Length: 360
Image (cartoon, rainbow, N blue to C red; front, side, top):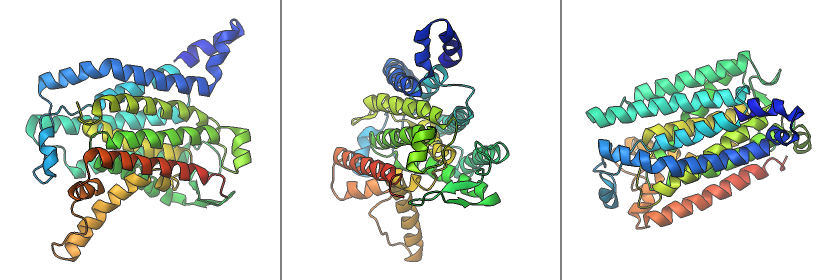
């Protein structure tokens, strides 16, 4: 909004030229998101407490989780507000990258909100089948948009490959199923990782920090040429969105760190995971998400492997409990230690992922 309003005024007042710079707007998008989280967070938490929108702790979870019963959930509303408002304020709203990211955030955030609301009112959510259907439809919308209105001609159904320069894998019409898998997988992986205080939101901040860098590099003609990565005009604007997510995540972490004052619920986790997958798709680095979001991948794979192993061995378990963070809890590690160690591994994954841009 500020970009569209103030940049035209630069021909009269040179100061307004500063709003042309993505780095300036991205930085202040993060600051705005952080401050908005701090300001709106306490009011939203008080409202959730008053309405008694609280988390029901599953009996199968480790004993230490019993004390969390009654903690307000649907705190993802804080995150969504702290992302959408700064993006509307600081980003170029005419940019299609931004438009698709906002659609993803609001679509999955709304779906997660509906699921949390159903759990609160009738003790049962919308069910996995309907969640998958909503995620699938979003992936279909994004995929068709990219095929019929590509950001760069000739690359609509192509994606970058790790460690290979100037070579792109063309999926053809199979690109849409692949894209759907990325968005649905990322959305559910973040949802699965949201099981310990501060765990998922901290790793989300790390992953989006990496994608903020990647988006800026992809949208910069000279740097992308130097790194031998695909140049996508306008992609740099995505860094405004990504840093807004970083600011919103850090702001939410203020309330979600152990002991958590609020949980984000599906309202936040589905939206953040889907947005992460969509960001990877838009910058044509879907496979890099396997590295940058490596801990999320491990969390999701641990659940899949546990289920398959349980069925194959007729009741035996490979892990003490899945997702993976619960396995370490049952090994005796404290919640805080697990969270911090997972953050450290997530930072390592992000750095390794970004380093692959030069290893080509």
